Structure formats: C-alpha cells, structure tokens
Length: 308
Ligand code: UTP
Image (tube, rainbow, N blue to C red):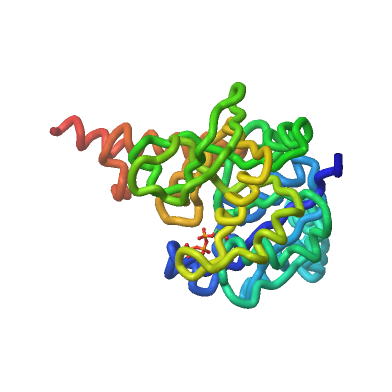
C-alpha cells in the first residue's frame, strides 16, 4: 500500500465568520492560548507521522509561513540577552517543519483549494486538515484515522455524532456502522434541512486517494458558486469502499467566535503552565458571581457578602 506522508492545509478562505478580527490577520494565525490555530493542526499531522506538509494560502497570508520560518534577528537578540528558555521556544517552532506552499488565487471553495495542491501532492494518498477545526485528543485524530486507512487502503473521513437539531449545520453521511466507530459511507448530504440520513457529521479531517483530483477537476461550481469538496467525495463514495471514523476527542470550530471561545477555555485549562491559575480564576468568577468586574481584593468582596 502506498505510504501516507502528505497533509494539505487549506488556508485560503476569507474567514468572514470572524470579522472584523480576520479582516487582515489570517484566522489560522489567531492565537489559541499561546499558539496560532494552525500550529495545532501542524502538530497533529507531525504527531501522526505525516512530514510533507502543504499549505494552500492566498494573498495576505504570508505570516502563516513566516511563523514557521527562522527569525534570525530575534534569535540573535534572545541569545545575546541570555533568554535561553524563550530562545528554545522560538527555535522549536522554526525547526518544527519545512512547509510547501501553493497559492489559490481566487477563493473558489474548499474543493478548488485542494485541487490547487495536486502537483505538490503528486500521485499519492494524502490527508487534508481544515485548520480551524481544532481537535483536542490524547491520540491525534489523524493518527486514529490513519489506522483505518492502513487497514483498508481506502478513503477515510472523520465523523462526529451530533444532535438531530444540529444536523442542518453539517455534511451528514448515509451509511452503516460496520464495527465500533467505523462506518461504511454510501453517500453524504450537505446541511440537510429535513430527514437527515444519520446523525454523523463530517468534520475537517480527510484521508483521500489521488483519484479525488480528476473528480475535483470535473466538479461544477455548486452551493455559493464554489467548488465543493463534498461533491467530489460523493462521487468517490459511490465508486468504491469509503469509510468514516467516529474519532475519540473533542472538536471545536475555532473559525467562528463561540467555538473559538470554547476552545480557548478548554485549551487554557489544559495548559501545563497556565491551567491551574486559569481554573482558579474561573472558579472565582462563577463560584462567587461578584468577582467579575470587581477590582477589589477578595477579602473586601467577602466583607461585602457578610454585610448582605
Ligand atoms: P470555511 O468556510 O470554514 O472557511 O472553509 P472560510 O471560507 O475561510 O470562512 P468563513 O466561512 O468565510 O468564515 C473551510 C476551510 O477551507 C479553506 C478555509 O481557509 C478553511 O480552512 N478554504 C475555503 C480555502 O482554502 N479556499 C476557499 O476558497 C474556501
């Protein structure tokens, strides 16, 4: 079976759901606690054994590449000032990965963005990670999917069980569970308004064969005038075995404001250096409702309560 080592990160969208913050700053560069959103996806891919990483970017998104580049002046300055801890942190990011970049000149949709990576991917299976779908998991989501791919040699998409009401916000699969967490996917419906075929939603992780490229090439512009990846996936699912994997972990849509806030809280609580203090802060905030916006020290607030 051809080995899997390539991962494509489509980063060329406009990020309109996060305006105005993402008017100039790419949403992939918004910090989730102390790392840009994209770095979590890069670490997930590297942690899943993928080492050829391709960024599909667009005009104004060069900071994405700069983040993973060397910053010689900064590094020299930190070295001269003996800031070895900071230097190590900066160095870890610069030496993490050598990225390949391709451009999507017009935002013609996710399917089109993936198609732009065709030459860089070549004739091999590859993974796709949507960076704003951030996944908190002990075992990286892509690694979980990779095991199914290595066993079957067939396409695998990540699935998440959602409530009946939420099905209208996702691509939903039609298929049957063949064993714990593994679905044979027969078809998929984009944001079904009525009668969803299941409650299993497609989220932003895919392992695909190169056969997807000719399908994308002939995919007509669909919803919103965009070339939809789902349309090509449907073709693929109809033409042969195609699997879905209900990953173990928690997914956040960090490309929209509420999802980003939830991710920030959960990642901050898990942060090795900040977690304990942040938890204490939240407990203060919710344990005694007066903490929020009250600049007085806790002793003074307690006195207040006694008077009441
Ligand atoms: P989204 O719909 O989540 O991202 O696309 P968006 O278009 O940037 O955001 P909104 O909806 O306007 O807020 C899913 C992924 O596909 C990429 C996006 O960057 C995101 O990672 N994408 C989307 C492209 O690379 N090119 C496109 O033309 C469209």
